[in-house]
Image 1 (cartoon, rainbow, N blue to C red):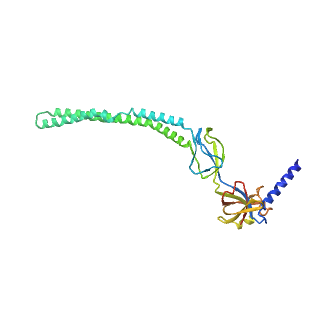
Image 2: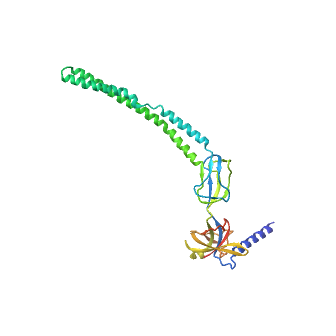
Length: 300
């Protein structure tokens, strides 16, 4: 059994090596596979998916609405809180109306005071009468200020009672907003994990998307080749077309690893004797031909 397994492994290694030399003359500097940055989009709310507008392979735009989680219960809770706020505020006293009676008494007392002052000047009234009016007016002013203070405190207290309710409404509004799932990037749907009318949960993946308009070829070079590469360097990229032919594309190196790693088992480099290699990333414009996992070769 072990012998059969060893033979299969040997054949696999030989096949990988032959593929790695698929450029015809074997003159390539590095090989690797194409990859793309994949984004898994999850639900931020829990509930029934009343809308799910996507299929595997469909093209989506950034901020496009792709899913909606049922928000009926949130909407009803919001209405209940708004009704509670309205009920609390209805208990607020009308300060102006409740102070109107005392204010009218003060105006009457001030008029009486002016009349008595004129009588005192004409020696038709005593100073005691004027003192009595002043005392009465002072009492009325104090009553006015006390009533105004009490009514203001009551009104402010009732308004303060609505602040927690307002905060709950804002929380519910945020939950309603999170129930609408918007696509984060322009790209192609790779995998759909759920269907419409299923129950979504917060953190549950809905689909996976990637921008395939520009692919990344992750390849490996040995230490001797480090001097041949630099950031923003233009390179030639080759991919198999079939029938022994290759498609040539242009690429640009945008990342070089800062430290070496052991040679990945699935990668063949120019110098197969090298144990340590450096990873590089090359961005390549995708005309629709490139696929995730496709094998590619690089020539500097």
